[in-house]
Length: 249
Length: 113
Ligand SMILES: Nc1nc2c(ncn2[C@@H]2O[C@H](COP(=O)(O)OP(=O)(O)OP(=O)(O)O)[C@@H](O)[C@H]2O)c(=O)[nH]1
Ligand SMILES: [Mg+2]
Image 1 (cartoon, rainbow over the protein chains, first blue to last red):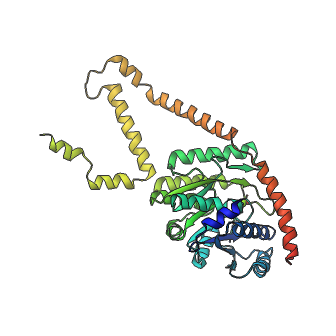
Image 2: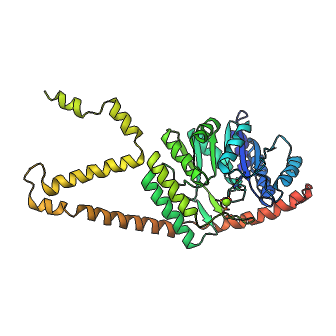
Image 3: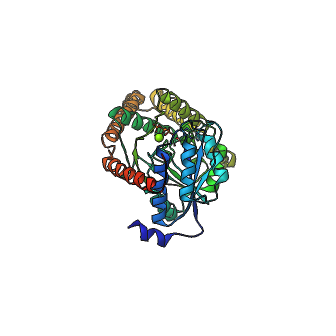
């Protein structure tokens, strides 16, 4: 269904670079890559996947090399780093090697499903947006595997953020987004936060710089494989980040 | 005749620039100050406008009313959004099926997990 439609509207000049930062994603990486190949194949868009592995002790890089052999070096690019240096710098590192004029940023843990990629692209073209952000909070968007407590924290934190920052986007901490490459470069340059406050800062600065933002509802499914890094001090670091942005943007 | 007043009050480019680059924190301080001044003018009739007592009685507890209304609005909004937060069960089921399919296909392509 998406197949024919996608191929028709595909423009040869557009290329999409997908940045996949990984840390201990041995089980998830083959699956996410398989899904990316599937959906990009069906839609006919030109793409490349850039895997940025930070020296995962579980051997993620070995798996990535096998995937490169299966799918080709023009489709799967490996840009590993020796040790865990954090997500923010992983993106900076990845962008340097991206050859597309558009860049997708998504998690490698299957929380972000590649089936939404054609919708992101369609949305971007429809409005000529500088960035398109996936949202769990609008339309058909949602989550799977969250209990009431987590929903409450998520909605509460989002409400406070909306009131204080009025960012013009409904999902600030989600990190499934499509950027024009030069827009991503200019944003990454300006952002100083760490962790997932980084995602929030990116969209707040985007609004500050008058970039246009489109949104696509996405379903967010909690990771099946691997360790979750969701800790108790996440709320503290979120509040710190929020207040910093409140005072500085 | 009133041009001095307009010159004085109409925001020049500098003021406009300041308003545009104000941080969210400053915007809030600015807004709260404006409301606070308006409230004090009404409640204590600082400009000696002979504001009738009934108006002043209404104005006096206004900050508390506003806080309560905002609090209720917040609770109602967050409550409603938590209650209507979509559970994407089908998405999870679809993903599980695709994981099976992917594993099968990858094994055939020679991936050693
Ligand atoms: N290269 C690199 N990737 C990272 C690093 N930290 C996390 N990642 C990857 O970034 C993505 C998001 O991280 P997650 O651990 O899923 O963070 P989260 O989504 O907030 O939390 P959970 O899904 O609950 O674990 C995943 O693909 C991780 O493998 C890092 O330091 N370096
Ligand atoms: Mg995750």
